[in-house]
Structure formats: structure tokens, C-alpha cells
Image: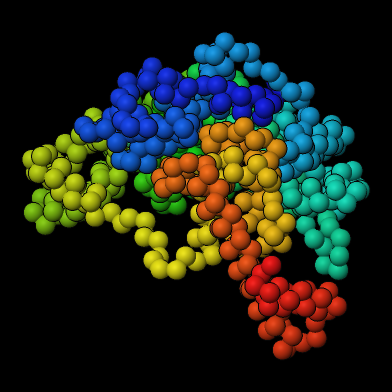
Length: 582
Ligand SMILES: [Zn+2]
């Protein structure tokens, strides 16, 4: 596997790439003040609400909310994965993409040690598989060859409580990272034990091929049958798809992706040459999953059981798909015959048989109409009105375009209404969709101060060149760790642009939040003014944190004896409070 792209190179690339030039070559832009405008390429519109800010290195559409850096734009518009977008950008600038030595972690990233420990754990599990004949025998019985096991990096977590702990957790550092990676659990009465025991281990890889978590299938009859890593700083079930990295490795272009239920299905399909299957990780398909899938392919086929639970799960997936149904995209549903799974189907009917079933799978529009018609008498006016009523909010979720028009026409036919009339009704439904609640008015609250500080820093990374001020170190309120992390990055990289700072958080749960903050107008026009407001924010955050801590200690002192340390802190806080926070 190729090594990671150094962060420094990504920073340089973002500093050098001209976002206006890159977007303009795909979507012609017009200058409007400090920014550039165009009709949005991601939703149909007649008046331009798509803006590109060269200062931020960021685009934002006020119509559909699409936004991101130049890397994000290439990923969305050219449907590239992260690494491909980097390569594309480098090529435009005539640069060679450097690669780090595999396994060498980046010192500045706080999550680098977590990735490192996950990679080390995957290696240990793989080695253990070779040493445990019953585990190998199990895979062989399930029809998996050594080659597939290798492609998917399958391993084995042996029985016992401390397989990983003994090998990787014998230092306080190792123990901390195993914990951060979700690989060990605290034991009653102190110490830890391994989370995964006596299980076939499926490493879950992110789009860059890094192990971010594991799925474990119990070898015997134990419970639970399937166990996944918990959510961690690097693993988010609502985002990762098991097998997507492997599918992309096996296919340069994916004409279609198959979404199946479990990792065993993905591996057994690959064994039969079906190398385009992925699985969600014990969750329903999220909008984030869909966006990732559609970046990789124009067509998604969901495989669900034909029973009631399967149909309900299909409906949930379908509803999530609607906002993503841009022109040129397709979603189909394959309902499996009773008692079959994708693996048994491909065994019985071969790859060609499965392909045939996939091609004949039901399109989203059919499944949608079926569900709407369910229990409705279309012969009556009441029934047709009811169907129109049910369809309205669903159709309103579709992005504007040919697909929406066609589906609207079909529903209109069904309810015997002129498509134009139904369209107007749908417009009303879209306008009635609830908006995000307005921020509370009045005195800015503590989270609002934190939000504002983070926003200023994102817009003007230069103001964070001084790093984390001492007064901010002990602050424990929500957002403080993120602010400190941002300040550590800006201190180490004083030339970073907003887009560069944002890209550091790609794939992390904070990413959408930070994107929103950068998409908003900062309302300050230069770094000097931003610096003044930022310093004020930090000071007020620190002092309100001290007050909260003081109040908590006073309340505690009224109820119980304080420890020496707490008494010392109380004295110090009282002193500072009396002297006005100096
Ligand atoms: Zn848009």
C-alpha cells in the first residue's frame, strides 16, 4: 500500500491552488465583490447562489448548502476520493505527490497514535490467525480462501483477556492508545481487558486505507455474534462502510455498488469475484454513507431481506436517498428470497445469476410508489388525495432536476392531477420544511463564545499563531479541546489558510461543524480586528470557566470535605475572582 501523503504537502497544495481557477474551469464564475458567483452545479437553479471565496479558499451554496475546500469541490464535482482529488490538484500544478514511509505516524496529529495502534493491532490479529488452525478452518468452511483473507486483512483475536494488552499495552502510553482505539475495556477493580476475544477479526478501513476499527465475528456460539469497535476519534459508524476501500482498490471505476448486510457477506461475495459489495456497520444507511457511495459510483443497489424488517429497513434507506438523487444517479432495491443471503445466492446462481438479479432489481421510484399505494384505494378521490398528500413531502426532498420532474409526473399520473399542479403543491411542502432553530438572542452564552472563537480562528488562522494561552489550558467546557487543537495547529503552521486548517479535520466528526462556521460570514474584515475580538472571547471564556469551577467547588465544600488539592484551587480561584480575574 502506498504511504500516506504528508500533511505539509496538502497544506502547500491548498496554499498554491487557486480555487477560483479550478472551479471556473468546470463551472464558469462571475466576479461579485470579493467573491465569485455561479449557478450551483449541485442543484438546479436559475439565479446564482453558489459563491467562491478566494480568501477562505472555500465555496458555499446558499441554495442547497453544499460547501467545502477546493479538494472537497473536486471530490463532489469530479466524484473523486480524497487521494484522487489530491493527485488531480497536484497534476494541475505540475507537482509530484510525495508519500510517507508506510506506518510512520505524523507527530502533530493527536489521532496519529490511534491509527498507529489500530494498524499494529491488525498485524497482531493477522499473525494470530496463522497460528490458530481452528480459525483458519472456520474461514475455509465459510468458503473463504487465503487470498480473500489477505485482501481483507482478516485476523483472529485469540481467547483470553489480554492478548493485545500484553503485546501492545505494556506501557502507560500503549495502554492509553489501546483505550482510545476502543480495543480494551476497564476491568472492575482496576486494569483493563481485551474487547475482542475468540473472534474472526475484520479490519475496517477508511477511504485512505487506514484501519479505523474492527468488526469481530464470534468463532463459536458465543454472544453477540457480531461485535464492532465503539465510536472513537477515528471511527464513526455513520460514515464508514465496510469494504468500500477494498472495492475501490479492486476496481478503477465502479459502475455499481452493492450494499449488503454484514462483513461476512462482503468477503464471501469477493471470494466469488463480486468485488463491489460494501456493508454498513450495524447502523442504518446514513446520508453521509450515501454521499460517500455516490462519490464512488452512479448506481447503488441495496440488498435487503424480503421480510417485513427488511422492507422497513429499505424504506428508511430510501428516504435517506431522496435528497441525494441528483440526475444521473440510480438506486435499486434487491429483496432477497426467503432464507437466502447474497452469499448463498451467488453460490447457487453464480456471478452471472447475481448480476442478472441486480440489473432487474427494483428502481427506487417503483419501491416508493408501491409503498405509497399500500392500503390506498386509488379508485376513490379520497384515496388519490391521500396519496398526493403522502408523496408531497417525499418529492420535495428530491433535488431539482430531470429525475424529480419524471417522478413527479409519475405520481401526478397516479393521482390524475396535472403535473404542474402537483409541482406547486410540492413547492409549498418544501417551503414548510422546518428550518434549523434560530440561535438564542440576548447575552451571548458560553457555548456561543466558544463557537465565535473557533469561527474567528478558522477565518483568520494567523490570529492563532501564539498557540494555546495558559488561561485556556484548564478550561473544560464543550468545544475547548477543539479550540486548543486548532490553536496547536495554527501555532505550528503560521502560514495556514482557512481551507488548510479545515482540511486537517477531513473525516473527523468536527468537520461538518467547522465547515458551517467557515461558510458563515465572519463579519470582521481584517485579521487585526479578528485578533482583538478573539482575545476578548478567550478572556471571557477563561473567566466564565473559572467562575463555574469556583461555584462548583463552593457547592461541594458545603456538602463534603474538599481534598487538599481542591482547597488549594478554591483559594486560588477566590483570589483571582476578588482581583477581577487577573
Ligand atoms: Zn447548490
